Image (cartoon, rainbow, N blue to C red; front, side, top):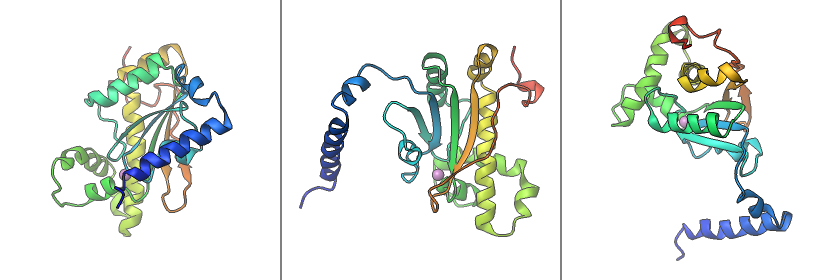
Length: 209
Ligand code: CO
């Protein structure tokens, strides 16, 4: 029996052939460099692939993914990706994309011990506590999880706005921060409209000049 990973190698051959069929220069052009307009910060969930659900091609989106799409201000991985995207690639849009039915959000709502990840998900518990009244007024547990997913995305967009990287960029140019939620059961993205083009919406203590 063929190992299941062979399917991926076969899939890659078909992918390469079909792209070359559509445009013989496709890979040659990509090899010259990247100039993406978007930085995507999404969940690691296998059902939320950035390019596939947005109908975009290789080279269009710079991607960072972690469990439950968090922007943690001490995460060197996230900060390095963010700085590279903003300073060197000059992306104009940063999208934080959460998704309904997120295992990370559901785990954060509960009290079960999973291990290391619980320390990571602690960030979502903090979002819960900030919005406890609103969330506990929702009796349906799935709807409560959906709302926490949205509030988590909004909080992560705010976290982006608090970074030195984004605030420095805003001094000289436009940089849009977007909060989206993807519905795994509909295939559709909801724009939560948390677009920020300036620091006016950040609490004064977080403003840097
Ligand atoms: Co998720």
